[in-house]
Each structure stands twice: as structure tokens, then as C-alpha cells.
Amino acid sequence: MTKTVKSIEEINGKIRDGSVCVVTADRMSEIVEEQGVEGAAKEVDVVTTGTFGAMCSSGVFFNFGHADPPIKMQKVWLNEVEAYTGIAAVDAYLGAAQLSEDKGAEYGGGHVIEDLVAGKQIDLRATSYTTDCYPRKEIDTTITLDDLNQAIMLNPRNSYQRYDAAVNSTERTLYTYMGTLLPNYRNVNYSGAGALSPLVNDPDFETIGPGTRIFLCGSQGYVVGIGTQYNSGNGYATLMVTGNMKDMSAEYIRGASFYGYGVTLYVGIGIPIPVLNAGIAKKTAIRDADIVTDVLDYGLGRRDRPVLRKVTYEELKSGMIDIDGKEVLTSSLSSIFMANKVAEELKRSVESAEFLVSLPVERLPADIAVKPMKQTRELPLVKDVITREVEAISEAASIADAAKLIMETQFTHIPVVSAEDKLVGIVTAWDISSAVAKRDVELAEIMTRRVMTADLDEPLELVIRKLDKYNISALPVIDSDRKVLGVVTSDEISKLIGRRKRWNWKL
Image (cartoon, rainbow, N blue to C red; front, side):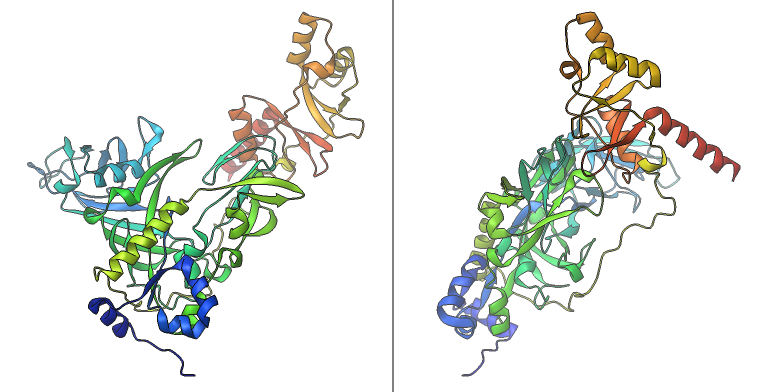
């Protein structure tokens, strides 16, 4: 049997004469199953992909044009969202994740970008120092997208090859870039369009790379090269992409706020994959059941989060997965509906000869591994300041026993433990004072049961954040079995920080 081999020129010729066969990526597995790999390669010319997810690492270069008299913008705000101006007099880069100075996380760079594409007026305010050629100190005006000389979207990191799923093992709600994670494994959030995702359909980067023409927010754009945090060696490749924002559609671009985290931008990206041979046909036949990712516990707040299990996108999309025998609800941060819409719109554009396919000018590297940040000064850990000489009290004890223990130890925070010596709560001198005022209450009634805790290897920076966020002054330190190892207090942290400052000063 003759093996199918096509050239990019042959496929573009079919696009021009209207004979091209285009299918969306979610249909390719059915065609391969029915006709085999060679049959599918012969019939199908182009496979269209699509994704529509939160892509924080996005932004736009603007050229505003010169004012009269001219100004060299030192600082510039668009709807009170600051853009970076250290590139030229009236050029600026607005990052999607930048927050508004008056609305905080409710509005940011992503919203400004969406508003501009939607044709809305934007307030522009700029300040500067003066020079002979730029005598103006400030300007305050309004602009629309049509008023700009250029608005060039350049997204440093988009279209993840795959994305980890997130869950929360702690007893408090977490607000993250993976959305709101409920306590005690009550939900799993994931991202990505599964079998529709561009880089999943071209895992060896045969057709996707620098120079590849793409669908970007309703317009034609291009792949610039590898994206930041590019980690192809572990299956987490990313793309840097660019396009003319003046040609984009508000339908495929959305500013968004994640509660308790910040601002992002939903970006619609679709990449057509030319089926040059049977090998590419086979790769584009990938199914959700074939795509595996990790479920990570975000509860520890570290880079090296524990992997709880492997899971397929078929399982994630089912709405529920099993974690340690518990059925946990899943939800997607990406819009599968919009990803399908991107793939379908790209299919229509190719079929109508509005969009020609292209090959990259060079292959993306396949073996790059991302490195953590180099830290020359390590953060102190809980074990550096833990007070280990802490006596716990039984939950069956009386308030009088607790008061006596506080008097004897001069410690105002007493961990409360069960009969198995596991932490079940904490009681403070304030709790006991309140109980004495009320009378006729038991220790179990006044103790705090939802206890914020720490572990020995937790960075103090995270502990300080917990103390500040929840307005408390001490945390029990526990092991993996919830046995009390000691307590970390704001006083001990302050002493350590003071000692380190004095030591650094002496150096």
C-alpha cells in the first residue's frame, strides 16, 4: 500500500480550489478508527484545534502617537491600570495580570484589553519628567483602539501542552490561579481543552513552531517561538504568540477576575495542523482518554506540590473523579464550548480559503526542562522558630484545667488533643476569659476546632501570611498524623527576623 505523503503547497492548493477536507480535532479519532491511519491521512488535509482558557501571561504593545507638546511617558495608566513604559516615549506594554490602582483585583489589564477590542473608550493618564525634546509633564485623555497607531498583542506564554489539576487537602478555602479550591478535597479544578488542545495534537512539534500561522482571538496571528516556563521535556510546552489586536473580535477575548487571586485574560487560540502523512494523522487522533495529567495538592503552598494521582481528561470531563475512595467534583477553568467554537471557526476559515496553513521555520526544542528560581538567601522555616516545649490538653479536660495550664506554662495558646493525641482544636487565654464570664460552659464548647496549622518545613513567609490573614498570633505545628510537635508564634518569628537583621547589619 502506498504511504500518503503531502506537501504544504499541495494542501494550500486544495484550500484555494475549495477541495480541501478539514475536520476538528475531536472528530479525528473517529475517522482513524473507521478508516485506519493511512485512510485518514489520505482523506483529511487539515485538523483544526482550539483552546479558550485563562492565560495570565498575555499582553499588548501600544503606540499611542505623540502629543502636542510631546511627552516622554514615564508612567502611564489605562483606566487606572498601569502599563510598562520603559521602552520608548509613547510606547507601552500592558500586561493582562496588572491590577487596577483603584479597583484592585476587580479590574485589570485583561479587562482593558477586552474593552479596547470591544470598541470602548479608555481613559489614558500619563506623567513624566521634562526634557528639551519632551517638555510636557502630564497628559489626560481618552482613546479607543482606532485611535492607536499600533496595538500588537504579544503573549509570552499561552496554550499549555497540558495542565495539572488542582485540589486542596487543608481545612480552609484556597484562592489560587486554579480558581477557588474548597477544603478537604471537595472540588478539583483543571484547565485545557483536552483532545482539542493544539500542542496535544502535535506533541513532537512537526507543524507548530516559529512562523506557524494561527487563529488568535478571531484574527490571524503567528507563533513567535517557545513560551516562558517552556517545559517540553516533561510534556508542558508553551507558545509565545503575536497578532494585530486591531483585527481581533471581542467574542474570543475576555478579561476575568479570580476571586482572592487577581486578573487574567481568556484567549481563544486555534492552530490548523496540516496532515502531511500518516504519522501526523495518528497523533491528531488523540482522545481525552489518552491525555494524562497530575492531580496536585495545592494545600501546602509550595512549588513541589504532592501528586495525589494520575487522571485522564476523559475522567476530568466526566464531572467527578476518585481521590482516596472519595468522589470529588471536577470543573474546568477553560471553556470547552468556546474551544469547540474556535476550532469550528478556524475550520470554516480554512474551507473558505480565508486561512492558509504554514509550517514553522524551525522545530521547537523537545527536551527543555524548566528550572526553579535560584535563591541565594533561603527563607527561614517553621523548624527554625518552633517552640517544642508545649503542653497540650485533652478535649475532655475542664476550663479550670486549661486555665491552670496557662498559668503554669505562661503560654497563652494551648493545643487541644483527642484521646489518640491528635490535634482537634486550640484554646487561648482569651477563650478562657470569655468562658469564665459566661459560666457553665465546657472546654470543648469554647475551643476553636477549625485550626490553622503549620508543618516543620513550611516557609515562615507562608506562616506570616496566615497569621496576618486570620488575625491570629500562633499556629500549632503538626506532623502528617496530626500529632502536635510544638507551636510557632508571632513573637518567636519577630525575634528571628530581628536577629537576622542585626546579623546582616554586622556583615
